[in-house]
Every structure is written in C-alpha cells, then in structure tokens.
Image (cartoon, rainbow, N blue to C red; front, side, top):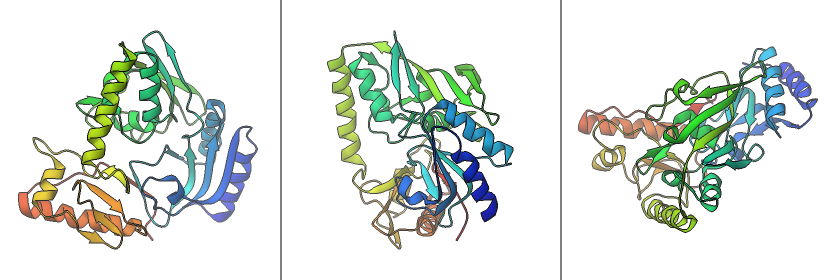
Length: 308
C-alpha cells in the first residue's frame, strides 16, 4: 500500500527527471486493450532508456517495484487499480533498426510494426507474430507465440534495466524460454531492447505470409471487440478453446463481460465490463471445464492490482 503523501512525493521526484511524463491517479482502463482497470497512484512514461533507468532507480530507492506496462494487451487490472508506480514504455521506446540479419528493437515497439518493418527490409522469421497485439517487451516476458512460432526462437539477446538504473545484456541461453514463460517474468527489471535473429527473404513473399496469417486471425478471433487475447493457456495435448466450447461456455456473461461466440478462449468487453465481471466469468468457465472434463485451465493473462 502506498500512502497519498508517499505517492505525491514520488511523483514529484520522478517529474524532475528529464524525458519523463508523470501523472497521478491515471486510469489504467485508458491503457489496456480490455478497457478496464482502476487508477495507478503514479503513472510514468519515459521517453528513452536513460529516463526509464532513472525512473527505475528512483522507484527502487523509495522501496517500490514498478509495474512495467506495454500496450496492456495481456493484462487484467483490477477495479481498484495499482498502488505504487506504473511505467508505460509503449509509444516512446519503439525504435527499430537492422544490422545485417539482426533486427535491433526497443521494447515499446508493437509486434505489428516489427513484423512489417522487418518485411520491408527483407528479413523473415517474425511472420508467426502477425496480428498478435502488444509490444516486444511484453512478448519477451511471456514468450508470446502463435502459428507454430515463439519470440524466444528468434531472440539473440535482451537488454534490461535493473532497479539501480543500470543496463544489463542477457544472452538467449540466460532467458530460459518456455511455453508462455521466460526468466524475465517476475524479474525486478524492465526490458529495454532486444536483438532478433532473422533470415533474408523477398519482401513481397514475407508481406504475403503476414497478410495471410492476419486474415486467418481475423476470421477466427473477435478482433473487433475489446479483449485481453486468449484467457487460458493451452493444456497438454488439447486446446482451451475446444474444452470451453464443449463445456458450453460460448456466450456466457457476467455483466458486460462475455465469452466470445467466435472463439471460446476470448472474453470480450461488450461496453461497460469491470474487472470483477471478467474475473467472475473466468472463475465460472473454469469450473464448467473442470466439471465436464476434469481439466484445470491455467490463466494466460496477467492479473494485477487491488480488489475493489
């Protein structure tokens, strides 16, 4: 718990850092793809890696571990919000460069921009990520993947900012990528940039593959509605969507939170859903699946913040 006076002092200290924008009591519903979530005590947007490092150091000196936010696409923020500091890297740390077959990408770059920027340079290997929302930083933390590929497979190294504000480079073998998991998850650090090892190919062919995968995603998933992506991880030798559909979860609602009629592993916000609605619906459909098949589904989304 962060007191109002502590939050105000911390906001004042952070606002003194060049290249940092600070607001207090910022509604996180404005910064999540679900469109839900209460306020952050202190909300920080750094313009570059140096500003990010200073924000990390000041927060750490105050005894606070900040929540690092990209585009908020794999995230449920509870209705009472987040105490302490939230640092948003999306929209600022988004530079993309290439060095031969390497793409050097800042953590705030969206996966969509990485896919198409690399395609323009004739670099293939990111097509699996076509249509995945979110930023590179978040993708690395959870080893995001689709279409038979994962970000960990193309990662050469990752640079992180540690709580003291210093930058450390981690090679791929240090990151321990697994299904929807890496050693970055839960670490007291923020991803600042990474190198992706790609392969030369014809730009027109890469663009064609990207467009094909996006078309398939649009046909199968409720991309026009607010959501946090897939709610549950894939269980062993099965699919969460199939188990949910078989259990009768499609169309179930709690308030304005509903299981998509298009894909049962998506919960969508029909307009005024709260985090409490979403979490209750998740609990209900998990119970349905367990009663029907005996499988305990594990959430893929991250859930943060305080209960109302």
